[in-house]
Length: 317
Image (cartoon, rainbow, N blue to C red; front, side, top):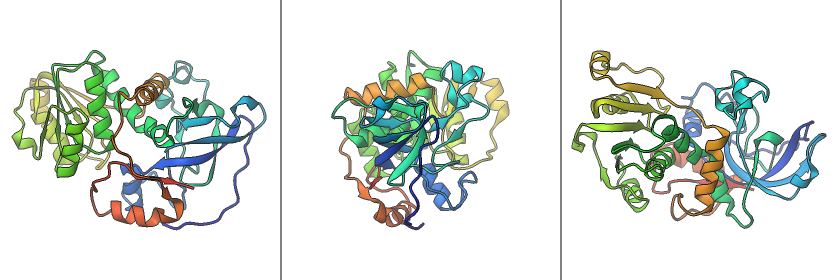
């Protein structure tokens, strides 16, 4: 990974330029850095969890955006299909992601489509704005399977996405929400954010769970999710660590289990996440200061070695 000087983008019709103020490093980007995420092909400016200020608009864009603080929804749908029309851009067959298919938020200035902008409340911390995207994933995971909550839920993994799913389960009204996480500091963080119980190993959890969310995505955690389910329970797979996983399908069929994959979020999910963060109902607790872009390579090298105590590292100009 390098830090380079490049020509700043120009806004095309329907686009704006956003000065990126805080861009969170996602676990999927660390996987890309390690060469384990095939959709991230170098050379690429990553960064899909970011917030900033609109500094310029292209043709056809409302000039009132200039100067506004915004969170960027990085999922860019075609804007005209049935999925986009109802706000489900994550299902658009022609969707692409800012920071994957086009340059993203690990830059001074980013060109994004106007329809990807969501205005932040005045005075909102840009780091919270950058957290809207990961939290929206958790909102979507719960809204997809348990909009009214469940009696008991277990989240596997207490990284940013796991904590987002945990908080979404709590805010959707689930009775108890527990977390399985190997890293001690992250277990402590999950408890501070509302987890009822935390476990260092899945073997400590009693089976019979209504909803298990795997926010890791390894073969071991997907198998654990199935093993913990109650009859007719649901396992949600949101983690992307590995691609192919063998599962005990006789057990799944005979247990009347539901296995659901979730990706991204609807426009409604994104706005719900912003509302929760803006109102203080969700978050990650104490946030680390934004790290200068020039320190980004060192930050990635550190994260590539394994989980750190900081839940989220933010880069910014």
